[in-house]
Image 1 (cartoon, rainbow, N blue to C red):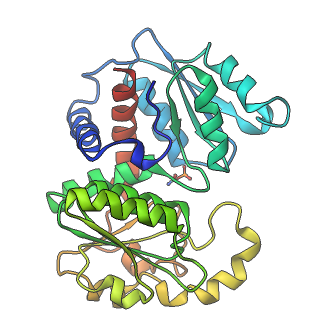
Image 2 (tube, rainbow, N blue to C red):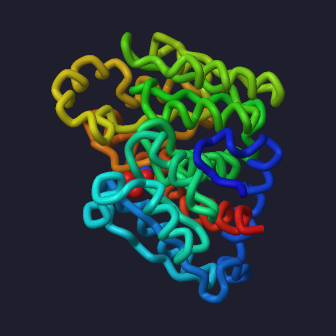
Length: 304
Ligand code: CP
């Protein structure tokens, strides 16, 4: 039984296969009915969402399946009953379980007991569906991923930073994550990314200076400075993260063809300026659309 719980659950070759499938599904959205029946996909949210719910629901429908949205506030998974018991119940109702939750250990436990594939729709540690969408977007705009440099600017200790390290390394990219003191990536994840990169010709590093990280980058990426669950730190973070704001100055340090990415929701004037987010180098709406195509691909691939 295969799951997609973190980016390195796919080997580099498997990641490329899923991205190729996503591109094919994007070109022919109704051509594959891997959820015909309709098969049910349980899609559970313990946290806020727009893009993830919309793209999974639409994608499951396009594959001929039924998206069963489960409100985590009602299910109270791990409180009203154990994660293992929820997994056993949902695994008998659904062909795949998709879950947005808090700690990675929760989705690991779901996968251990579900008896069906489980997909991570964001945890505190990883957001692998988002980074797959971003890799597809990079392929579309820059023609490839191999050998390109990606700079993630902001909270380098965040789930997005971790997922870019692992997924970018698998895609043969040179991944630089950059953030203030105290916001460095998990050393174990950075080491894993470096190990993966050694096999793909890429690299993975933490860069302390935002300008150094942006220098010559093909892709400049940021995300909210206040990840879900960190809202009480909002004021402190606004000050300490200011040098990492993705504005025209950092974009100018990138390659002439550099693109700007943000997984959304975005806060103009905080982690990214309106000029960049709404400007000609921004590909954020393609990223949001591509969530549907890559998620259809990963669901189809897991069920094969
Ligand atoms: N990017 C992303 O995961 O969006 P949502 O939080 O709205 O689902």
